[in-house]
Length: 141
Image (cartoon, rainbow, N blue to C red; front, side, top):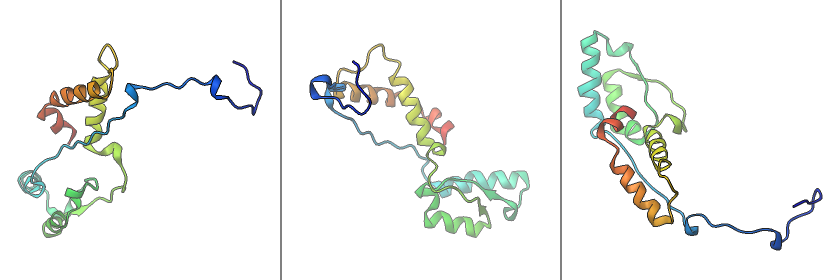
């Protein structure tokens, strides 16, 4: 179809389309490591001690995830004399869950055909989410 510059389309000239039966799907998910301070005590401190690195010489990097910025975690870092590296407030590409979403999207695109509707899409999301191993999640954290 040809139109002159500035000439709009009429409703007769436009055919609407609906994908996935017109529905949408919002998914919430998370991965995490329970006991953040316990993990720091059992991993970070032991690693520092084993390497002979004094706490006062450490600058620790972490994002602004609420479990990392909790008052409990902040107090722990202060008590250990460990400085924290300033981190951007919004850095979604650096968050482990973003690797999970990318992984999930790649596997959803591996199906030969797109889902016939929101319910089939949900079933596929649940199936693919269930295939993500603990080891894969740990690599992203």
